[in-house]
Amino acid sequence: MSKPAWRWANLIILVVVLVMNTLANVLPLNGQTTGEISDRYPVLLTPSSYVFSIWTLIYALLIGFVLLPFRGTPAGRAAVERIGPWFFVNGLLNSLWIVLWHYDFIYLSLVAMAGILLSLIVIYNRIHSGGRPHSAGELWFVRIAFSVYLGWICVATIVNAGVVLLKAGWDGWGLSPETWTVIMLVAAAGLAVAVSYRTNDIFLTAVFIWAFVGIGVKQQDLAIVRTPAYGLALLLLVYLLWTAKEWKEHRESYY
Image (cartoon, rainbow, N blue to C red; front, side, top):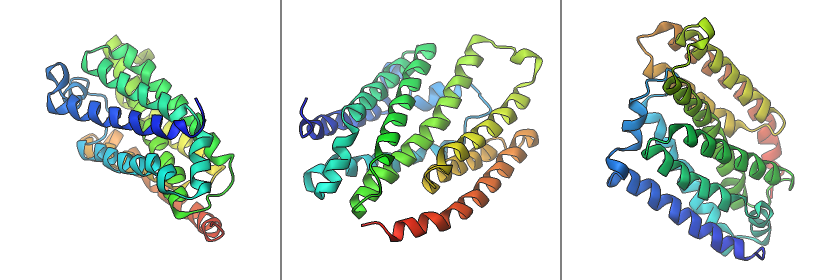
């Protein structure tokens, strides 16, 4: 497929994703909403329900992304073309995950989620290999859009893995669910720093903070999880403020 054709493919697949996600909860698909299925698996890493409103922001930014090559600058179009087929692949996997999740193919849903994550890693690397953004549209609808999306899918993959382990009846190798939750929170915080450090990505870090606070809210009555969740959110906030200065200096040199 030619590079210009990808803008149409991206537009179409995003429409498919939006329709699939809407119908999945409006119909709902297989008689159960996405949240109802999640509630059947009380994984301690699952954040409070309000946290999932981040999808509204993600989809708003992705709408800007698919429209950017139609109305944006040549540099913006080049940034979209640099991503190539990977957004289309991501959309297919997103739609597949909805079907697998709603029809209780929980194990396979993790495979689809891993595919979503891998496609976003490729997209993220391609975006950052292209140098600095040359317009506000490119900054918001390419760079920031996929930073937020990748950050959230990192969190979602960890939660999805937790659901699979719970469904499989994993005994935690003798450790309690609370202990494993704290271990995974620390690992997730380390992942946030590892991914964002190279690019001073404050937006990806902000997503992890948003999720950690949501986990603390959800586990308000469980101090062994609540305290580390809030504590790590605070540490990530300090890290974010530390990296924000350098990000601001880079931003002032954009476009």
